[in-house]
Image 1 (cartoon, rainbow, N blue to C red):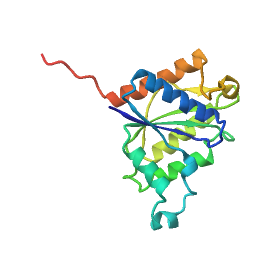
Image 2: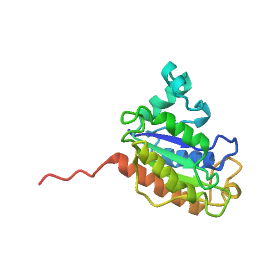
Image 3: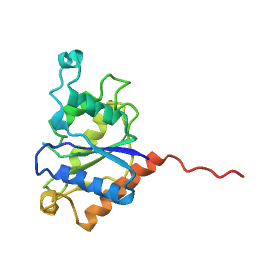
Image 4: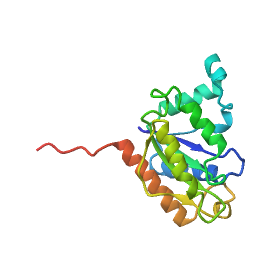
Length: 190
């Protein structure tokens, strides 16, 4: 069964992006509870420092790198801080991108989504995140752009989204990821 890793680019307790990740997790598990879904938090990543890297990765970072390396796909939800992905997310991607060409992100299928209290839902951060991921060697999936606007107002008390439009767009994102993980359809023999 596929292994999907989810990561929010925000570490705030009531984060709209963490609510997106929780909603995506529910969507995947409702589809097929045999799909292995893990969440990696950038909260556990120290500031990138080559001295720390040379000394050996801390246990939490080592575990996160192994989780991403073992995944079939990664879904990242980013806030927009001044139009760019958050620093905490960029830091996590810096750690996951090493060593260049042989990192947990190299060749990894990655889908991106954004969420923000603003009407645009952080859409202006998505092209930057896609470029960062491409620079890290990830296979950034082409899919319908998904940005959740008014994300704080739409989040339920349970910390997920129930709005039909948001659910439909997040379901479309999940479809794109699962289609990529499934690979090309088998061609029947003649």
